[in-house]
Image 1 (tube, one colour):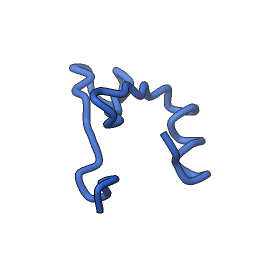
Image 2 (tube, helix red, strand yellow):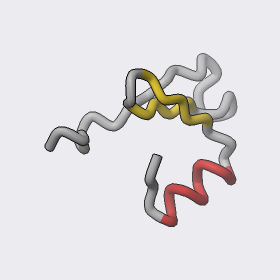
Image 3 (cartoon, rainbow, N blue to C red):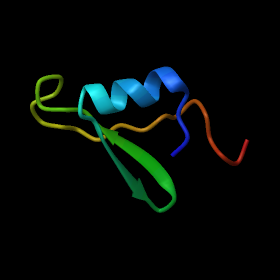
Image 4 (cartoon, rainbow, N blue to C red):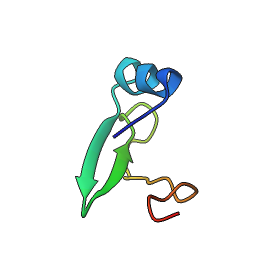
Length: 49
């Protein structure tokens, strides 16, 4: 997954997890931000646009 420099550092610093599901990246927040660790995806930017 390509991220801008800022978000790349946030992902590593805050210990987010990224999972690819059918070619779509899902971002899983660390437990201190979301105890349920609910996967999220970016619905604004899509590769088919």
